[in-house]
Length: 356
Image (cartoon, rainbow, N blue to C red; front, side, top):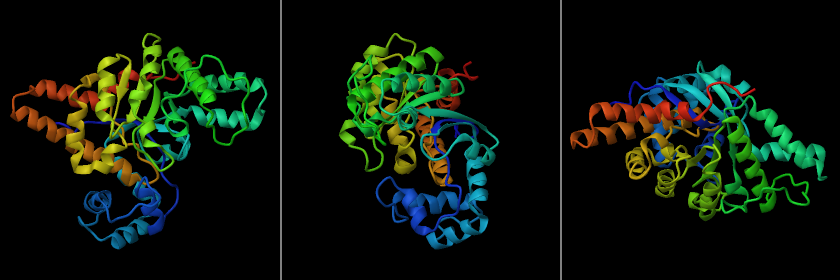
């Protein structure tokens, strides 16, 4: 396949759990709901595709897989599976799942940080309190973190939805919440992130589409960002729409309509598995080829980073083989498309060196 030898830039993922887990812990990390299970499509994929990477036979039983995993230890498992992805750059959302310092020893690839807006704001509010000075301190802290970051991220979809109010000024008061949910404060925070992103040349990532049960899925449709995208269209900001399923066609429309929008189907891929070819085909119906980036959104289990890469290579490879067989694309164009999604599009969108 055209995708087999390509190196990957994983432009959005998380760290791995730095300890061994039992079956209950493994299965919980395997899903986005309250509980995961080996008795699922992704459970089958772990036993079929991750097992050989750990020197086990394909389709090994769950208990045997976990027993061998425990013998190897979490660190050896992570090193093997991360290496098997063929990823040379990892952009880690440090707002959830550990930092770059914990992830770096597990891979020979470059590891850089994506700063989560809400985490920084919550830390500042906890330290400074609810006075007016908190807003200046949030901005100062974000600017400081941005200088070494590769990107910024918002999880406003989880907190109030992507139909947040557009605010250029902070609200009159802030409540010392452990978890920010005030729409006006979040709208100001996202706007601040957009301004800092444009200034520093850092893409602003948004979680869109499905996630865990903390989410209200109908409020995570990227189409709800349309007014925000109109407002930021000529500011120099790049907006990254993450995951997107089941709204990946909506995200593709936005990438088609707005020149500063990019997208991935990151979290989607490990879960749709062998259907990744179909989801990629639907995204590429409208999305310009330059707008699609690769990510795994791996978190907790390195099996998820591995399956993100495996199913992406298999899905896009099969799609391009189909297009080639039907004379819809030349080999040269197919190679450019695959390399673009694998790493070139991300390299073009994100800064190559930290800002100063």
